[in-house]
Image 1 (cartoon, rainbow, N blue to C red):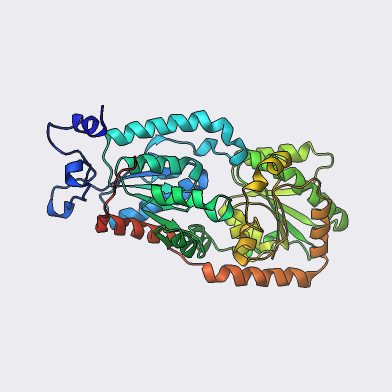
Image 2 (spheres, helix red, strand yellow; image 1 turned 90 degrees about the horizontal axis):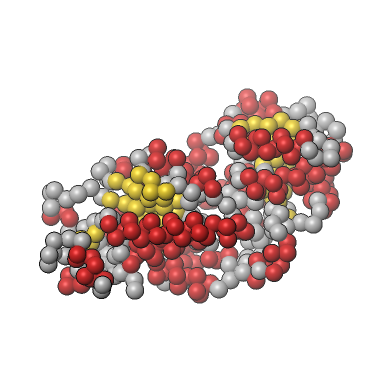
Length: 432
């Protein structure tokens, strides 16, 4: 059945099929429908997709921000607990099963099922716009489905095509599958615009949380340890990351403890599962380390601020450590055979950790994407702890890099971009 016939069959005879105010009848030329002329127009209907826990939290903030502009807006899509609490109807939830690139193969069947669900959904339900948040491996295919249905797409937290090879191909896909892109890094707006992508810098959503959670001075004082080194250990929030990185962090902690016998080690646990895993790995290591495990945003903020040095799993948490101006060593330990076989041909950035990417130079030591042993990491940690001047210099460089980009309101700014899209009524032609 031809495309037009399939769609018309879902409506009354000879009536154009209208998707959230967008006419999909070829006779209308895919022109936007001016819903302001109709006082009885339906509420703004938004499809939204977030596949991971952090994206779920950012999406929830976006939903709240957009509803401040359009209180009648309804949201439906791939939604985690935070989005559902914000009032989004969930078609599916992948946040509890999210994983990084090396685990993606095992998720292919699940992703295909999700895409099938969303194809049926877009064929049945009208939408004014679709919002994709991070996770391009899944969200770019969903964006393609939305665009084929004639729905304009906002991509919030843009795919990091600047970090990977085959940029032309990647950016052509982004351009074809999005209407606008809301960038979280200042250098991304000019980068995407050079590729013909309508991009706008809105700020990083993590800064809203960080600005709202200052380190409590009393907690910071409680964590400090009689002039002895305080080491914060941040092993990540995902189980497989903790299993890959935390054993190496423990090895470094043992080396520090051998030199500074009264050093204090504070580990941040993202949740109960991570806490149990931390205790299990430490108990089964060849020589356990005395650890203070903390949970919650307030204790994490205080632990980071109190630390002389942080051992950090690569990821967004490095932005928080930089925001607190705490010297750090960034670690990640992926499969080195897989990286040398495949990964190294795709990664094009000289640096891999967020602080170094922003600085354009190495201002914090990074040992990633893998390390054979921890001897070099331990040596660098001891070198820094024995040279307070170098720690102070690192704090100052972190301040210089982070301070200019600290701005609140990323979710509000992204919501404004979507509002502009809807008000402009841009012509959206379905992809073929």
